[in-house]
Image (cartoon, rainbow, N blue to C red):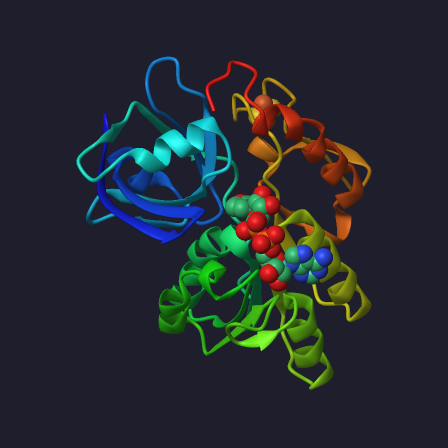
Length: 273
Ligand code: NAD
Ligand code: FES
């Protein structure tokens, strides 16, 4: 069993949990994910790792309460346990030794897995900036953590209740036009956001990686549920990703496939939600 040692409700829709999982904490790298389950018959929930602590043997996850299982998960308290916490899964984020200065671009709950990547890059001596976007002030998360590892933390809210008003691409464009130079951009958040980040960085020839989280079932390359098209080739996000070269991702196909099960996800056909 995997005991919850810390819980923070970050906003009405997002919960952070630190969980004892010695094997995952020992083996994982930034960019990888795990599959959590509550109860023997529980749904398998893939979650990109938000942080890990090899000394405390813990993993931090941050999740949005969207469907039946994540709502159940959010009801767990410190001292409760997950039945399964399987990982690390997927391929570590592809960092390059020649990166000197990068910028992360995060939207909503995607801010959490970006933290794990920037923390590791900061540890390696890479100068990091970050743009964090949210619908309004309460949806902007983990700002204080980013302040510890980033030189500049830019905040954008759709309604202007915190930071500057507008979406994250507005700030990224401003920075690029102001002459800021970055070796790489890492973006994690809604597909539509990552699509527009990539559209912008392509124009300026700044290599960009994205983290995809399509529907996953087994998380080991067996079911084909997480199929994505990268550079015209079929890849599985769970084993070939979740991080990919953003210039090569077929975002329109990803968005079409993500929308496919939306109705089923929100209207539980078992009458459980
Ligand atoms: P959201 O819809 O509230 O958007 C967050 C921010 O993204 C906005 O404030 C805005 O700045 C930016 N954004 C949204 N649409 C944009 C557009 N058209 N152009 C430019 N910027 C835009 O985000 P949410 O509801 O918190 O959802 C977060 C998303 O992150 C989910 O779709 C989830 O699937 C994804 N996610 C991915 C991972 C991963 O590992 N890949 C992990 C967690 C979450
Ligand atoms: Fe089944 Fe990736 S989740 S192949």
